[in-house]
Amino acid sequence: MAEKCVNQNRCMFVKTLKLKKNARVILLRNLDIENGWVNGTICRVLDMLHWGVVVCKESNYHERMNIMRQRWNITPKSQTAESYRIQLPLDLAYALTIHKTQGLTMDDVIIDMKNVWQSGQAYVAMSR
Image (cartoon, rainbow, N blue to C red; front, side, top):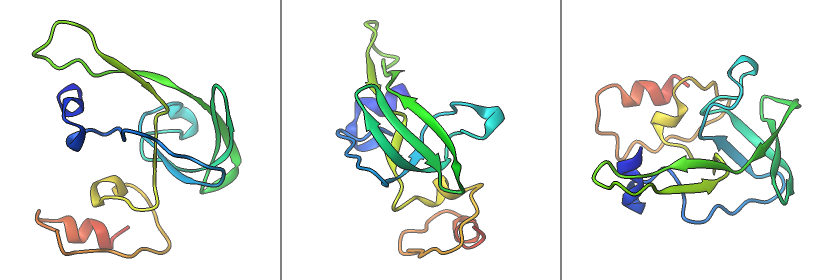
């Protein structure tokens, strides 16, 4: 993960995360495994506060969680000085890669197959 964040084009973080109420987001980190708040969970933003956001699971609007900004170490292996970023462990989820949809169940999808290059990607995309 650290090497990816040196180059913004290959980084899992967006430069600026723009959110609003009811935005569809995806968790980028496991927060509470026992209760299903795991990397890849699709949520909706309910409220935005100075310390973070309140979200609910898209699959169950009664399940809510307060999500605070978290520290992410991004020090490349080639450097000795520690680098980190503080950010919400979220990204917008209006469009997802095939990789991000693995393990999800979706009712309606539109699949763009133009850039499918790896064996099995089409199967994964169509079996969601």
